[in-house]
Image (cartoon, rainbow, N blue to C red):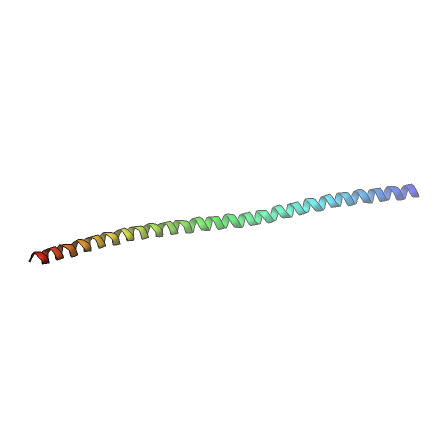
Length: 91
């Protein structure tokens, strides 16, 4: 009877060790799954940022072109004003 009890206890201990290992593996798999889900979210977010970055860069280029146009118009207006001042002072 004692031998049978000893064997049963050893078997239960082995089962407990195997369950502990299984629990560690399951936790690891869950962490990996959680990371994969987060990674997918990050990937989607990065793709959205890339799309928005393209629009942002287009807006920056448009703003730069508008600033160049505005600067050119100001230079032309300054030239016209100076020409009128010079013309008026000559008369």
